Amino acid sequence: MVATIDLGKRTKIREVEAGFVQDSGSWIFLPRSSVEIAVSDDGKDFRTVRTEAVPVHDEEGGVLAQTVRLKTEKVRARFIRVTAVSIHTCPEDHSSAGQKAWLFADEIVVR
Image (cartoon, rainbow, N blue to C red; front, side):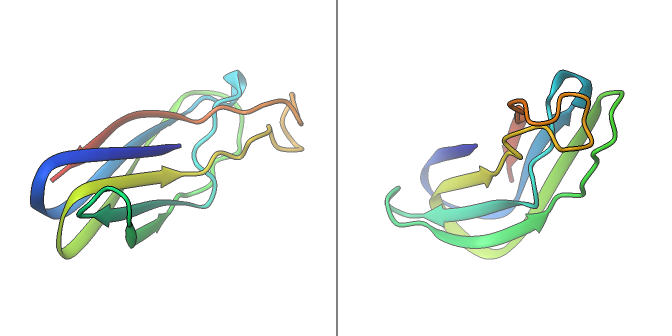
């Protein structure tokens, strides 16, 4: 998932939150490894300002909501890009191992 947000003008950014959902029984998994925040003033050239690890929860059953908070220091930009990588296929120990997996994001908040 790559989401680019245009703030309309150069703005101080203190924190970015990205919410994700896991329902492994429905083949929906949290991002694998990390979520990355990059910023830009022109919407073309981005620089990474923060990467945050996402805890792994491979167990089946139940719905899990996970919010990843990425705090920044002294960052000003017009554009923010949030990148999260899917696991692509259900893991080997899953009842549907090898089938296509989904990545669901529910909201992105910029403070």
